[in-house]
Structure formats: structure tokens, C-alpha cells
Length: 148
Image (cartoon, rainbow, N blue to C red; front, side):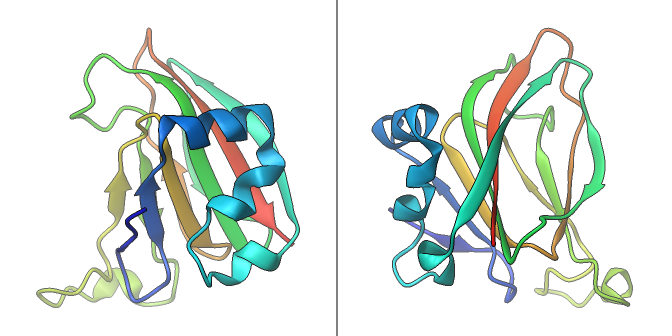
């Protein structure tokens, strides 16, 4: 499993194998086993819910309710995976973050993560995120989880 660190803030993304995605669909309590080795969230208790994002669905800024927030795309029907339909858009909510635009640094610039089947996004609970509008005729099924 390959992890990509997007910011100095511990944001991780990975594309889960179909078998791991199926495990989570059947039993969401297995999420901690799929987190990166050594991640503090592996030992934390998690609560989760499954959300269905149908065409037209979108969400303004959200935050996790725990120390860590994980979003896993269990299923997706998308006509064009190169656009932002249903994408997760991560924002740094810290004061002044939007005013920093130094070359090579991500602060002040949102990070867009496509919602393809198997995408796992793991972020600190305080990190702000939103869901771009899902195109009509598309949907996403997402496991949203928060650590205690």
C-alpha cells in the first residue's frame, strides 16, 4: 500500500484493493486495519456511517467530529473521472492559510481528490473539506468515519 503525504499536515490518500473495499462494505469496523502502519488512528475506536451521494448532492465545508476523519469510496458511478464531480476538496482552515502562496508550498491552495472506487482519504479531524457537486446520473457510496 502506497501513501502519499499531500501537506506537512498528515493527510494521506491511498487506493484500496477491491478485496479491502469489499471488507469495509461488509464490516466497516475493519477500517483501522487498513490505515498506515504506525498511524495513531489504528489504535483508536472509530464510528462510521455510510453516505449515498446522488446526482446534485454537494456539501459545503465539513470537519470530522474526532481526532481523525476517514472517507472511503465504496462504490461510484461516474461518467468522466477527469472532472471534479463528487470530488473531495481539502482546505487548510488555519488563520492566514489562504493568504500564503509561496511557490512549492500547498498552503492556501485546496487539494482536490477524485472519488474513485477504493479511494481512502485520511485527515486530521480539524481539517476542512467539502464535496463538489455530483453530476446528474452519477452517485458515490462513501464510508465516512471518525476516530474518538
